[in-house]
Image (cartoon, rainbow, N blue to C red; front, side):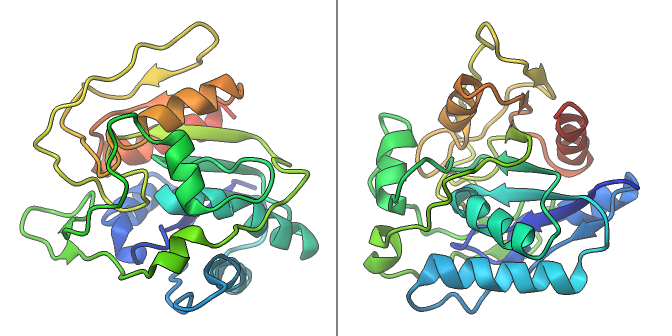
Length: 254
């Protein structure tokens, strides 16, 4: 039985953030579930996101192995969602982070994770301009960020001691900012890092525009993932079918 893909949008945006990616994955033969989490609008924000995502997965995802894919600020919530799936006797088959903040051991806040993982020149707060969702055709409706109070960034995130419990991979697309939203300032060109020794990265496309609110979206996350020994797919600027192929290619190597 093939692995089903679950696309988890950033809590700073809605599922519209994924643009045309679900359809592009389905066109390549993948079974795709796209949870919509919008009731995490009050504390505890992270716990509410995890609970709703788990319910959506239980209701809509098919039986069999599940690949949990998180964008941006959903990355640190993967351990909690994975623990909920294990409690339901359906442990994930793997995890993929796309331009995302990485979970790290111990209780942490989004603010602390950003400070530790963002590019050195990154501003201290996420950009709030609406931008087109990746994979949307020109002129499509923009994906507007969800307003979040200061407490959203400073709350303690749930910690899961035995994570990761399944293979992990990182996709650097430069399409989603490390704040979890689509990259802003995409007219700013960003150079892609060269793979370092021990970094099993494949270039999935040419280097293109991909600046993000916190610096190049996912570039530092990709480096940190490589240090953890995770496979990294390098596809800067990829959208549409190219992004879908990069994601499935990474999953096949995990």
